[in-house]
Image 1 (cartoon, rainbow, N blue to C red):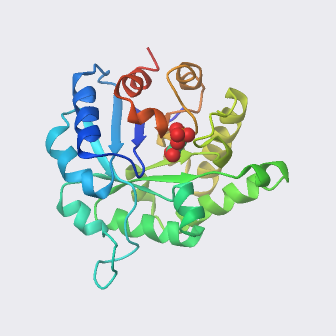
Image 2: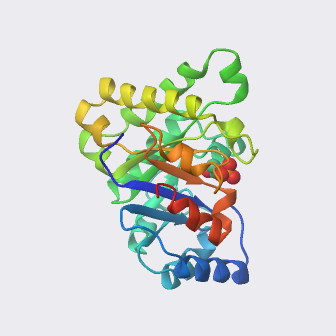
Length: 251
Ligand code: PEP
């Protein structure tokens, strides 16, 4: 297990109305969460400012993506330095939905990590294989390439501001959660990969999150696994009471 604080991320994806976001913030503010857990929720870009002004500590916020370099003539994009200027501490990069639907490849995700870190953001970098890749025996190659692109674009010092989210694509939004054995196997592999390719100190501290159909019923078992340092939660993060339960998964 990484020595950093247990970490829970909530990825709200492309969801929310002013009313539902206000309700969710109220539910989170009313919840009780342990001091020992770092909690970060990621609203859409349009809701970020509202959530930042209304959500109370200890909750922090993240953007769900950002542009790969300095802002400028990039219609529709939001840059890392803008997020930093707005006081947004975190950004999710390389989520599987962006990798598949927006065709973000490993290299682009690595470059995004590099630029976001250079602008003072902390990064939740997502990796994970598809079912086809797992079943055809390519899972480890896929994970190696995803990790290598991130490692290639980061320095030793950057890793204090990075968490890795392992999200098997077949488990995201499907209700099919990885078994504890499957999750632990990959998390241990990721930690070993980081020890060998980045450094043992980094691997010892690194938080490796599991993501994919985490809910209040399965979170306790997963939270006890040796190399699971937290979760990235999609669907269940839109329900305040469920998300609060997940934040208390270790209790
Ligand atoms: C996610 O999108 O990061 C995710 C894990 O989604 P869900 O929890 O809905 O599977």
